[in-house]
Image (cartoon, rainbow, N blue to C red; front, side):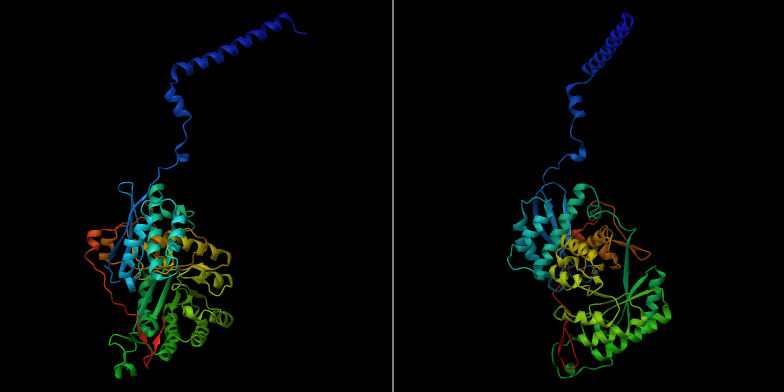
Amino acid sequence: MKTPESQSVNSRRKALKMLGLGSTAGIFGLFDSPQARAERYETPAYAKAAAPVTIKSVRAITTAPGGSNLVIVKVETSEPGLYGLGCATFTQRALVVVPAINTYLNEFCVGKNVDNIEDMWQSAYVSSYWRNGPVLNNALSGLDQALWDIKGKRANMPVYQLLGGKARIAVDTYTHASGPTPEAIADKVQQFMEMGFRHIRIQQGGYGGVGAMAELKPDFKTAGFGRETDDFSDQRTYLKRVPKMFDVVRKRCGEDIELLHDMHELTEPIDAINMIKGLEEYRPYFIEDPFSPENMKWFKLLRQTTSVPIAMGELFNNINEFKEPMAEQLFDFIRIHISQIGGITPAMKVARLGEWFNVKTAWHGPGDTSPVGHAANNSIDIAVWNFGIQESQLFNDRVKEVFPGCPTIKNGYYQVSESPGLGIDINEKEAAKYPIGTKSRWTIRKNDGTMLRP
């Protein structure tokens, strides 16, 4: 039963409580303006949608500061000063890619939202009805990379962050040591080891020994068959030289350095299998491109014959070409040329597929991958779990002047840019100083003049 004293206490408590609530309300009423109240309940910055940005133009920039023909796509947008760059290099037929970009892609893309990369890729891929050709794939690759560059800039983040963030400290690379003799190659390997490289590709001469067989006069040259500039490779000489090269380099440079070699599809499949099996004692990191795309079924026999790791794929045009070999684990490293496969969007799909089958990435990075393409490669390399190795280029001063922000190598690692987007630009005035050409040196013949397929 409540006493008069307890009722009085409760009444005083209620009065104080009401007074407190009233005071608080009064304070907000006096000092909280309508604008302040609106700001307090406004949508936070991270939840706000960015204003739409559309494509204003798509055009090609050509240049050759390092010797190889390079084609760059520049996508300009409705936002002043915002543009993206991508690598569309098809160095052997560079001039054919230019109208595909300037005419067809430009017309196709103008007015579209820059953020819808997947839709843009899928629609551009089938817009010509027939697909998979290198010319259109290169144009599409440049567009795709440029759109990712723009998206990174819009997000104020490097592209690799949009792909999942860092999975490693930097991008490990391999470089190239070639020479006329195994001893000269071993000298170069030691020089690169002193620079910090842990992986080095060794080649006696060019691919298939081209350029290192001057003592052999091919019969087709004597007969005046083909062009004077046609190259020559004697397959038997090449097949005998490769094991000797590995033996000399391994004995001179030790067991710790990882050695690679590119066959470039220039021998008969059964000969390639026998040679690779004979290299097992030298523990190659991988042997690249033993068979041409026309001879894919030989990979099953190769896998049953040897434990040497195999890399393949730089000649693939269509991402579907990777599917069955990866699912069957017919090779260990997937080689993608970023300006050939269609750009970052499909390359990421192939990389993610590789994770399921323990197949690692080893993206193609020769002289005809522009610094823009290398920046795109690095963005993927740093982010995917199943990264293996990245082919590298040491860029000369002319290339660096044309491409500010050119990727750099330290202790054998590519250093990934922390700038928004791909972190690279192009100086169009400098680029114009190095016009591209039309010459292609991919004519390699046997002794009797028969063409070899690289």
